[in-house]
Length: 416
Image (cartoon, rainbow, N blue to C red; front, side, top):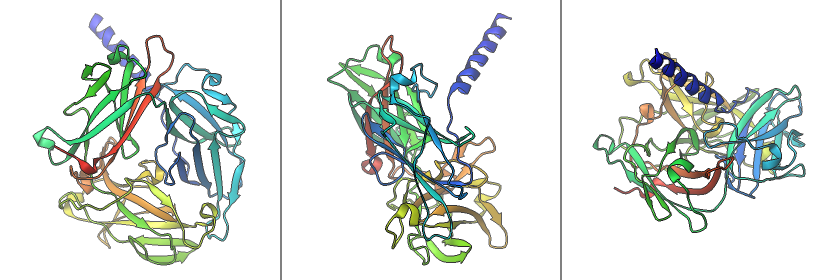
């Protein structure tokens, strides 16, 4: 009886923690091209140093010139709400209207383009490091979408080495991240309790690894050299298309059409899991808005229905397949699912996307929504991937998790 009660209590606590972890809210169909960045032209996971600026841009395709508002919240390393009051992490005010917007010009698809920069005259500064989430609301105070971002302090050196897996079973398919954290300016107290790291591959928080403790402590250096715990599937290079000249065939585009709005028909792709690895430079799942003959890309770039196609083969039978990339924050839903077309012997999907250069790949999804990135594209240790590592530190008696270090590297020079 005692054991049963303990089990029930543990189940309740686990459920409570899972429910307390905040999740991003995905945008509705009329919100497109959410670009969230710091000091890079392309949209990617914003990881910025304390004091740097942040830019959020998006398009509203309903033509209403609606008002949108934003709030900013602070979180612990595990995305549970922190105990800090707003005045402790924000100088100024949020719950402000996004005032900077313009309507599209000379486009078939009408839209309003919104831009929010932080700091601004109302939100003057974010005061502390850590995990943050920005939430966008409409006039009815309903949340439209949200995005996560991180702010770090440059107090530690984070050394990264990308290695092949030590496990013979995954020698050809996985990449391992070795980490060394060192600091001359701060002392880590009881690091196995106070330090947490987050490892992110290709800016995708859905596949990130967290909760790891340092294996060794040498002086004031923390060493992470796990065999399996810091390993990622290598995946494959992203596929790409570019329709900056929306009236003509470009990279990856075999044909175009105009019917109310533009249509870009991509070349049909094939399953790569059973093919040898081929190096093909990419931007690791990100996208860049670009258009020919446009003075202001933000409002002069048009939208096109992009038609994706994957050639059928027996290995794809009964598989649920989605198209995947940072163009929608790596979300999987009914709009990204490919449907089999028996007449063409193709799996197809159509997405309304703004002109630009896009990375994408096809992934398998199990009935319980587990993502298998290698089911269609394959997994290869040679794949060039981007890795980011954030170091969280909550000293004994502290009230929130600081991010005291940030490191970034590529697997281009992977070693044994």
